[in-house]
Image (cartoon, rainbow, N blue to C red):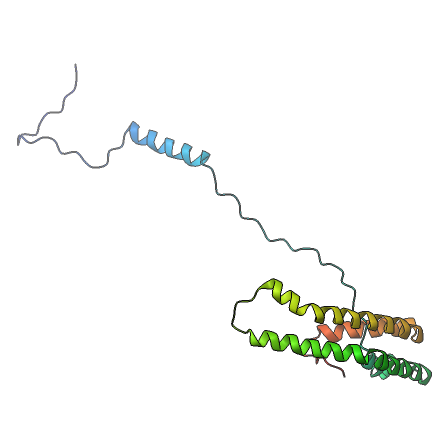
Length: 180
C-alpha cells in the first residue's frame, strides 16, 4: 500500500519547506567534495632564492688615499718616500688619461642632462657612455699596475690593512667618495 499525504482539513495542499534533508543532499555534498579534491590547483608560486654572491676583485687603492694612510699603516720613512715617488710617477703618467676621462664624463653627463625627461634608447645611451667606460677601464688598469708596484714597498700585513681599509672606504655609510 502506498503512503499518501493527506491534505489538511482546510483543503489546501501541504506546505513544503525550502530546505529538505534527504539522500540527494548528501550525494550533492559528496560530489562537491570529490570535485574539489581532484580539481587542478593553481601552481605554487616560485619562491625567491638568493643568488650566490660573486667574488668581485677589489679595486686597487687610490695612490693619494694610500699615501694619506701612512699613520694607520705604520709606514716607515723609507716606505713613505718610495710611495711618494710612486705617487708622483702616477700623477705624471695618468695626467692626460685622467683629463680625457674628466672631459668625456662631463660631456656624457651634459648629454644625459639635455635628454632628461625624454625617452632614451638603451643602445644610444650605451654608445654615448662607451668612451667614458673605455677610459675608466684604462685608468683602473693603470691604478692596478701602480698598486702592484706599491705592494712591493709594503709589508704583507700593511697590504692587507690597506686593501681592507680601501674596501671599507667604499662600503661604510656616509663616506666621502673622493680623496682624503
